[in-house]
Structures are given as structure tokens and as C-alpha cells.
Image (cartoon, rainbow, N blue to C red; front, side, top):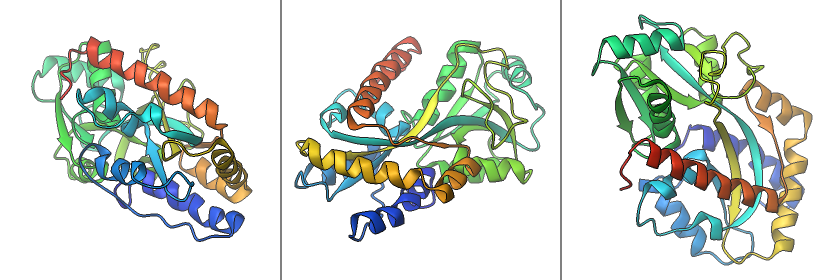
Length: 286
């Protein structure tokens, strides 16, 4: 993950609470790198004792089916818990000639090759595939511009160098409220309490466009169930604390704290979903 990104923000939110509840220091260390391989390499090379955890997001999960020879299998990691969940948000530059999804689609179709989408995390990230899913559902003509991280694409959006992008709510709530970007739609089934004036993709005419963004914790393969359960219980207790519930709400996210088995099922279902999207969109796995 990249410092300052949504994953980093979420990890730091719970690290202090885990330090208190587990009576040991919990540190957040950023391990950026292509296809999240440095972080996964460290995780898989660590003892299965629960002392090394990997905070993943939806972008990590979609990376596996996008890369044909991905050296890691997320389904073989030890699931701990889904920490929080919420929608992605589609935003545009404040100077864009469109303020709704319908207008954006019309602009893209009447100006082929001119509508630029920034994709934080590069080709194959969840933000990239969200833009491809919109193209698939609407028939829109877009230029999908990959970036190493969402922060870089946001910088270009704020500078009006690109037209639109999908992003995580914790990053964009403040930008939209501050008038620096325009919120076009959220990808959840219902509107977000953090940005109640922003419609859903379903309300914007795309009822089959519901995509969840989530953050969760994985432990090394072979971690005993008792250790995973202990860690899960500590996280569930932390995210239920009023101050964290309030903070998650401000970010447009909801605390979860699911059981390890439930989180494992989510990862497997997401791997299947995005494999199909990649196939349907005709995206060539790298």
C-alpha cells in the first residue's frame, strides 16, 4: 500500500486500537510495489504466527485474475477479517462539461478518444476495472490512463489533466465536500450517508453496476485458526468503538469485523466476479 492512500488510512485507524487490545505494538509499514508482490512476498515468507498481517483492499483481489502467472494465490492465505466496506465513487474534475453519469456517457460517446479516466494502481487495479465495467455496461468510449497509485491520479484530476476517475470513499469525501471534485455516483446499492446528494450508479441508469470496496486483513498461509480468530475478535472490538464508527462514517465506509470463514468466502467470490469482468470486457491478462 502507498502512504496516504485509503488502505494506509484504514490500517492506521485500527493499529492503535490493536496495540491497546493485544498489549503489543502494532506497526503499519508500507510495502508499495508492482502487483502488491513485495507485501505478499513478505507475508508468505513470515512465520504463521499472526505477527505479520497484510491489509488488503479490493485492488489486491482483482490483481490476481488480471495477471496470468500471478505468483500468489490469495485463496491460500489465512483470512482474518473484513475490516470495513463501502462503495467506490465516480468523480470528475470540477471544470468538466458534465455533472451526471448520463452526461459523462453522452460526452464520451460524442467525443471518442477524448474522455480520460485515471486509474490509480495501474492497469488491472479495481479502479481500472471499475472504469472498464462502466465502459462494458454503457458502451462509452474512454481512454483509461493507468497511474502507480490513486494519489497520483487524483493530483491530475484536481489539476484538470484528466476528466474522471473511480476512487475510494475515504480519499474522495473531503474532495467532493470541498468542491475540488464533482461526485457523479457511488457504486453501492444505496446512497452513502457521507455524501447523501451523490446518486448511486443504479439511480444513474445502471442497475447492474454495484461494486463494493473493502479493506481486510490476511495472515500467512498455515496460520492456526485460533490465532486468526483471536486477531479477528480484536479487530471486531476495535471497529465497533464509537470513535472508529464515527470516523468510518465520515469516510463513507462501514465497520464490518466479519469472521475469518466469511471473509475467505468473500475473497473467493470476488476472484470469480472479476475474472468474469476481465473476460467479458476483453481485457488481456498480463
